[in-house]
Length: 332
Image 1: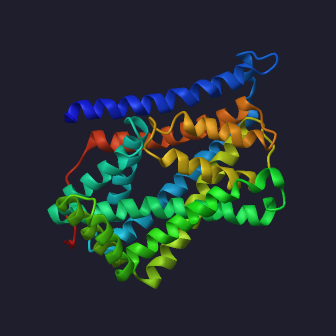
Image 2: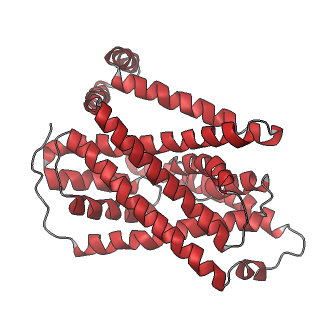
């Protein structure tokens, strides 16, 4: 298939995956008794300002901790850039994630920027650190769901069913990390992939496996685990404060139980910017906690708006540019 035709086909599929759930989200909202567009504006008041600001602060702090985690992963592979420079690249990546079709454009931009800062040999380090950073974050939000489920929802028949997807996702992550860090399992995976992947792709996968093994350090795992707990907790708190901003009085445990599932679906590159599936899933989940369809969707959109506002710093950083900073040391 022609590359351009393939690109258009992928975009068409993403568009369908975005619009179909979005239609059902809209239908669920307008089908409510006495629905009126004024209901949307009545969600906000002067009291919405404080929780909205707190949501901004939580997300801003989470970006600082997430960037520090990214820095540690890069340094482990021999790429040393100042925290200030990496923070700038991180915000540029956030901007591209929010404003480009799909939700991985920012990650590609971050890898490219690391290559420009650190040289050709830094491409693999940037790719490995960025991929691992995202995977580890999703791994920890899955742990949050399991922890909240075990503490508060395991004995609730209506809620217990949502534990099973998280259990399987958690086991999948554990298997993946074991394959990445164990030479024996990694070699078995590479052998299996050699049967189905082209030689050039296989070489790149094996190279990535070898790079992931650079992360086998107890100290590093303790550091990034603590940073992931802080980062992902703050990002869930963003949704909690957005809920307060629209008048939703819901215990924070519900957010730690539901939002990880929404985050995992949003991270899948199957829609445009995560729209559609994210709102549909949030609407379906929070309905079980007694939250109306409109409020559950507005919480997600407001959290996304918070992300958009902060990512504008990345837009300014991208437009202003600046001289590339040379890495002190580079890993091949």
